Length: 198
Image 1 (tube, rainbow, N blue to C red):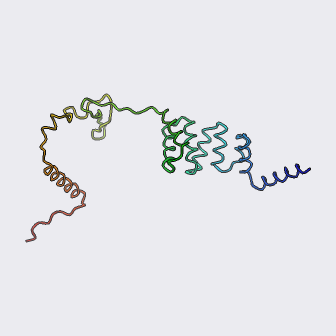
Image 2: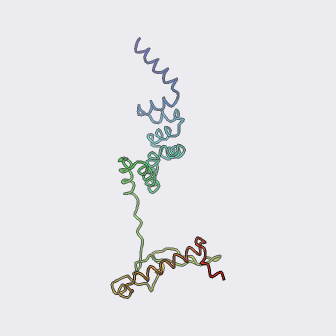
Image 3: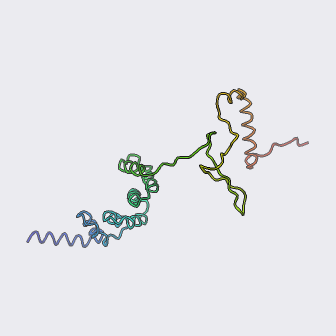
């Protein structure tokens, strides 16, 4: 009789607590599909959907929940195969808390699934570009591995090239200051030099 009274009291407490309590109880019991209808909070609904294996719906719920579930959103994006975006979410978690070892481990796991970007260069050490002329505008440069090199007459900065340069730091500094003055003058940041008023 006493156990029945405690059970009724516990059910009454859950009833008063609301549907979120039922959802949390279902999650603790390992029944995430049962928790989904009771979870009105998007963060809780997202957890229930994720545990139920409904990753697309979980990602939508986490997106609705916002910044409070950044870590969970990283998990749902990884489950959907959106690895670069998932890595960005784990980076955001690590920015807020660099000591989060789970986020670091998950970021490393996701990072291993992303194919690295490797650029092609030419013999001058520059990335090749291809010039495209659209029918309604000026030519535009587009980076391309098989396009013509950016600077076919370029020269590598080797010892022979360095020997041709004058060793005059004062001249370099004078040219640098003059260039900076011209830049600021063109932006309107420096008033022009005043001439002789007479």
